Length: 80
Image 1 (cartoon, rainbow, N blue to C red):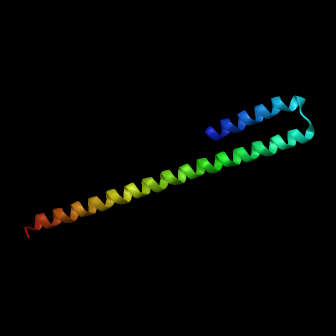
Image 2 (cartoon, helix red, strand yellow; image 1 turned 90 degrees about the vertical axis):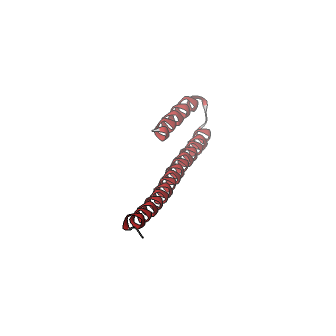
Image 3 (tube, helix red, strand yellow; image 1 turned 60 degrees about the horizontal axis):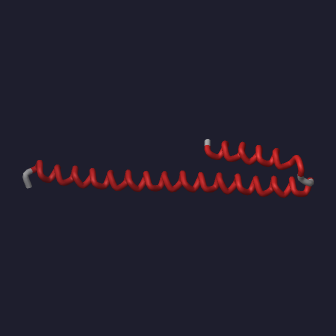
């Protein structure tokens, strides 16, 4: 959603600025806006990947704790 808003805002600013600019300047602005939008997408994807890795690591740690607890309970329940 954030990326869509950024793209829409950039397009709006480009359209407003295009009124008094040369074709060369318009083209340069469009290139710059496209690069900015691509960078925003890359950052959003990196954030999503980092969140997923963090979640997976937390899940693995929790599973390890649970396995340890279960193994300890099994030993306690056998009376050995």
